[in-house]
Image (tube, rainbow, N blue to C red):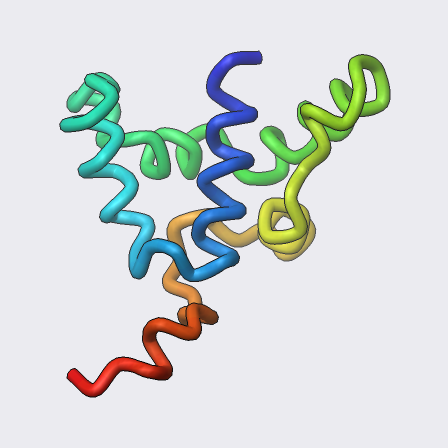
Length: 101
């Protein structure tokens, strides 16, 4: 019940285009949060667990314990399509479209 809400928030960050790649979140979780490096990072671990399992667990918990556990739209889409969470997505950030680099 501790890691699944973190993964849900990471899905929101990816959906909002705050980070460019899921691999950036893997590095940040290992170096910044001391997530076990042998697990490959938070997103890598989440893909091993499976988006559908994470989504269904969060959905069940949100019905039981409230909106804190409500699955994000990104997580729901990935779970319904059977896609890994770390598959590249097109950035939606306005920073990218305004960048002159």
